Length: 224
Ligand SMILES: [Zn+2]
Image (cartoon, rainbow, N blue to C red):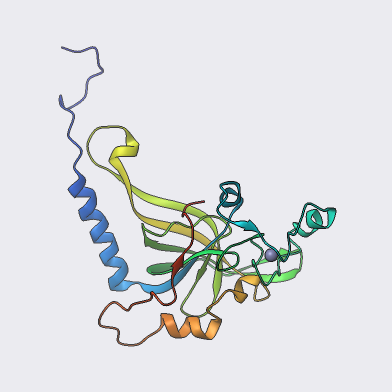
């Protein structure tokens, strides 16, 4: 019958969205059952600036001078306005701040020789819901007050049925490879402060989903 290579089946299954919806529900359910609250902080990026969504940081990038070129070096990362993002919107360098359930897995603590000296590096992976999309140079705040920078992103994508992947695949969760930020990092200047973060994320005996809307905001597109 066919010019096509053989397969075990002679038909192409339809796309079955309910399977993906059910799997996303199961994975999200696990996050709420055994997870913990965490704050997901997305920073403004050069892509947002190029799209006209955000301005240069008025504190550390005021023009095109040679001084600015110097300030763009990583050594100038203590800016109180943009926290090193180099761009500044309604909430300084922070584009969005969202509180979601998360599951953390920690690697072994190790010591790495950084330019500023011997610093303890703590690596972890964090899995959270598919509606939060961070990228490198974004941050995650844990319920113990520690803050972590995102190094890598991987999504759990499911396929259902036959068709172009963009239409049949969808993310159910995202997992971030992260690294603990040094206590001197400007990320610790991002509100809420450490004590408030611990209080927000550790309310005891929450039987119902809390309303975090007073802390959350979303000023721009995710995933850049
Ligand atoms: Zn700045």
